[in-house]
Length: 130
View 1 (tube, one colour):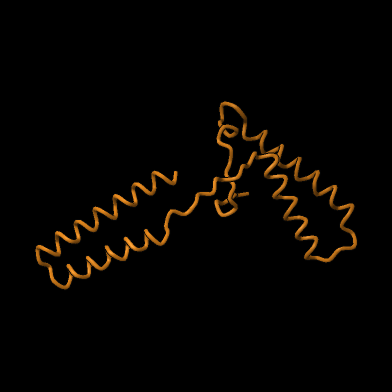
View 2 (cartoon, rainbow, N blue to C red; view 1 turned 90 degrees about the horizontal axis):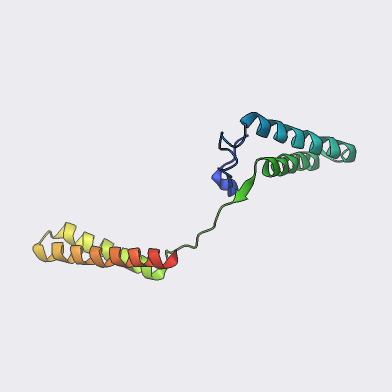
């Protein structure tokens, strides 16, 4: 079974260190947990429709995987891209367009200055958001 980052979960690396825990033990623990959950749900699922049964099976697999494989939630980062950042990006784009239309020394200096200011702002914003 694979777990993607889209599920916002990640394996606990300490648990899967081969020196600490044998992979076979983890597999057996997962299989036992999964078998127990399906055996418990088989007694309750006699009269339900196929969609509900499939939903229950899906939840059983997810729950047993998270319990036996020690999954933990990933951190959610706040987005640093706001209106001010978009303004700097627009300024940089405009300076580049001016330079492409007229590659004079003043436009080269202008694009260099705009890039420097935008990069400094993004770097400071990225540090302050962390």
